[in-house]
Length: 435
Picture (tube, helix red, strand yellow):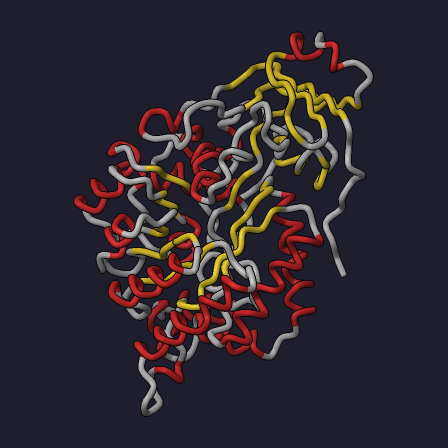
């Protein structure tokens, strides 16, 4: 079975040759103008011991430290170095692509029309039920290797392509095994309320509310008791779950000790964003259809607004999340890939940065902060990852460019040349020629 390469655990490492060292040192979370403050150190260096950062600063100062003697040295030769990306919204485990639906959309079918015909989430769920855990894991491991190759070191991963207890549990167990068997951190989220299963729409005596009862009374307690997930998510939108149903599920999830996340306002304005504020969710994701009052409410809350421009791009939508309005209002904005087989089959955070800049008018600095420290905040891990500061894990990515703004500037490609997780090199390639 394919696994990411893992180097022997290092003791002391000195990293130099950072043309720009993007530390993101400062207040957490980042709001408003502070979102663009990267705290860039030119000709910077890092000292790492047992996977954690022990010193960071200008190269001359770090190299002159007594503890920098007799350490393993890595000279990055003038690359841009930043914290490893934190991808706070993915659907990592699925059985196959949905390329046929991609072609259908190109021919004019909408996402919702395809779903009503048995495609979309139901398509993936049907295939997943017949796929072994071994095959799901093998596919996910290949994806994780690509995440690392694009500079991602931590990702959130949801269930949701099961829609039966056995299949939802299978996904969560695969995710738990993956966390143990490869170096990337995986934050598990239970998304049993991804969509109402067909059998709860078209059979006598079974209703969507009956499915909600099943999730609340039986599945969530099992998820919590067996430590299968850290968060619970609900797809609250037209064609999925109502605000009232989402409130019931997420209230039950909180009672079980789970953190709360929410797919909100993607296809229609439903009131899901204000529900996220009401229940103090960690994150409200998508948000393409939010109103001005939603923006004000989110700006006065601690809910992270996780925007997913890859989904809008792949679906060919004209309306992206209102990043500029959210940032200017003072909301906490994060970025994620929404990696999934139907609406955003990308593992590339650099591509997401490009879309955030060109389609949502975020600056390169804002996009980097949104994909690192703010995303880490949404997962409750900002004390360990998301910035390059003393005491935090040495999770970083090096890019073969001269200026951090070139990371989103070169759209559709990645210049990531090295990725480290807790001081271990988990991806490396030879230095490419400059464009």
